Amino acid sequence: MIAIATASQKGGVGKTTLCINLSYSLAKRGWSTLLVDTDPQGGVGLSLARSTRSKLGFYDFLCGAERDLNRLVLATRLPELQILPAGQYDAAARRGWAPQDVPTRLADLLRAAELRGVDCLIMDTAAGLNAMTESVVKACDHVILPQQAEPLAVRSVPHMLETLSRFRSEGAGVKVAGILLTMVMGESKISQKVVNELRTLLPPDMMFEQNVPRLNSFLEASAMGVPVALLKRNPPPEALIFDQIAAEIEQRTGLVQDREASHSHASLLD
Ligand SMILES: Nc1ncnc2c1ncn2[C@@H]1O[C@H](COP(=O)(O)OP(=O)(O)OP(=O)(O)O)[C@@H](O)[C@H]1O
Ligand SMILES: [Mg+2]
Image 1 (cartoon, rainbow, N blue to C red):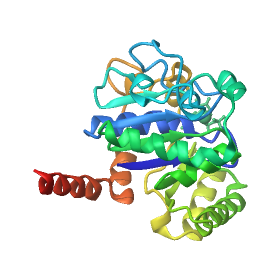
Image 2: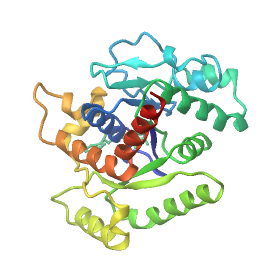
Image 3: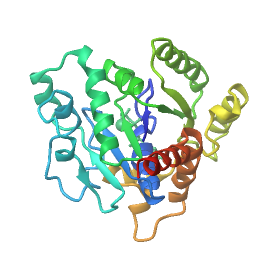
């Protein structure tokens, strides 16, 4: 299993939109995908889930109110896509958790997901790098850094990369899956200038080839909490953008090699 977090110092850069659309594309490509919402304000996927049977989720697992992940995961209409909602943050916070226990609980969560047969765990995070997001990122194998194509981006990217190298020097194994340019305005000279500047400044293998354009359909789809592919009866052409990002993710995170390795372990056990 590969665990991928998304994180940004600034809010509203398109993390949740990325997580919903990418998880959907990965699931459609046959990967068993679990989308985890770690944003206390988040309502990820509740519209995607077939039932809202459980209001419990990530934070209830974290505080130990529910230790069985299988009771918390919600099915969606795509069999390969499952969701772990954020759950009852306030109740969980009242019950409390010791900050030093968070890494262990996150490791338990990842292990439980792997035992469920999850190939790809996608973790959405709250805006900014608070202590919880820091732990979530450190627990994952990879992190995707969505970056809005706006002038200050050129300053904030190096800062984010420094923070991640600090995590690694503190012992975390998390790698940067890539920087993903979001809300790119094809028509805007400023937006294009930022895209060009970042692509010149950063090593090409650090950037996703595919950008996410700013389009009303993404706004509409996220207002409904669904991937853009499910917005209309027939998926609009922009749904293909996230299929392309999913294909890049397969290569960048070693998802394909990971599946081959676990298959060969399984055949050794046969
Ligand atoms: N490519 C896009 N085109 C147009 N609108 C977008 C796009 N991506 C995101 N949005 C809109 O921008 C807003 C912020 O996006 P989103 O919620 O995905 O960001 P976020 O990083 O998760 O925010 P937060 O940090 O608050 O969790 C939402 O209203 C969303 O619909
Ligand atoms: Mg969000």
